[in-house]
Image 1 (cartoon, rainbow, N blue to C red):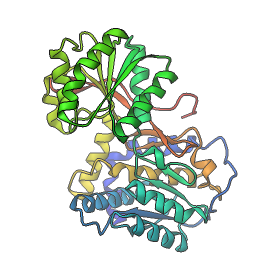
Image 2 (image 1 turned 90 degrees about the vertical axis):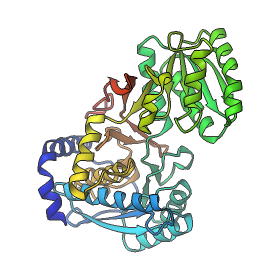
Image 3 (image 1 turned 60 degrees about the vertical axis):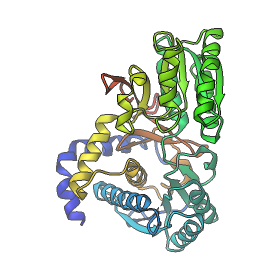
Image 4 (image 1 turned 180 degrees about the vertical axis):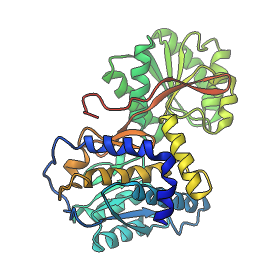
Amino acid sequence: MFAVFHRLCKPFSALLALIAALALSACQGGPVIGSGPSINPSSPVPVALLVPHGSANANEERLARDLENAAQLAASDLAGVQIDLRVYATAGNAAKAHEAAQQAVNDGARIIIGPLHAQSASAAAQAAAGRGVSVLAFSNNPTIAGGNLFILGQTFQSTANRLVSFAATQGRDRILTVYASNEAGRLGRQAIQQAITRYAAIPAGSVSYEFSQKAVIEAVPRIKEAAQQNQANAIFFTANSAGALPLFTQLLPEAGLGQDKAQYIGLARWDTPPQTLELPGVQGGWFALPDPQRSAQFQTRFEAAYGSAPHALAGLAYDGIAAVGALASTGARDALSRENLIQPAGFQGVNGVFRLLPDGTNERSLAVATVQDRKVTVIGPAPVSFEGAGL
């Protein structure tokens, strides 16, 4: 199987060479000595991959397959580092994840990539904590992060930071936040408010709404009033296309608060599902997404290897293995210590540069896009490095 991967690698060789060079440069400041399981630089690195094989949910089973394939692809791409990748099934539940993590550390795993769900990730981290093994989960839920548990999924904070910083440079710095009064909405609002403070934008109030059609309709006049009173020139929605976004982008312009008055910005991606691009109200709005060029290269490579497009989350497994490989390539026995995992230069992933943060969350480089004529147009390219990180 690995021979097949290497043959398929040739069209991707330029990108892989760049990844290898940049990943190595991220660690050239010298190894950081810290706690964690040691590795033998001359032997394959034992890595556990926890995926939801055995789940009763067909979509999760497909995701498990794609995560495993992406991890195998990443392992085959590493130069000078061998990964002993061991796959453990979690069936998509916390109890199985705890058992799998225990078995993985007993089998000698030096780091765990996965699992998928927040509760499963917490359970796996708890099982591995006593052995000093870090867990790089596929979740994007910041409330579970910390200690030996890191999340790889794109967070609200990364998205909010990118969009608020871009908006501030465009003079759209008086930002009204519109959020659902549920956990996701409140976390989104918190991320937006923190980004406003970080980038010296101006908070122009916030409006919450219950998650129902009636409540969304009733929120429209309150949003208009708040925007006028606070002189908002941008409205940041936490809603996605499966929630209130279609209604808001239809009703607000009808109420006289179109994008000629305030720029619409979305915390969710507005290109998924593709039908969202057809909505008149999202035309001209801004949202963030991973580097489209790098994402397309990964998709092409994955399709060539496995005959189908990867799940949207499959790249997270590749990124986890790539980070392990970059650190292991330094030859340090403590390469996978917590201190080295959070080194500020970060890592090159298939969707762009990312780094793990001390609080267990992550920061990802994102592009800013708009919708023009029902198509996605990038108006702010994804940065290729973190400022001052030395990449």
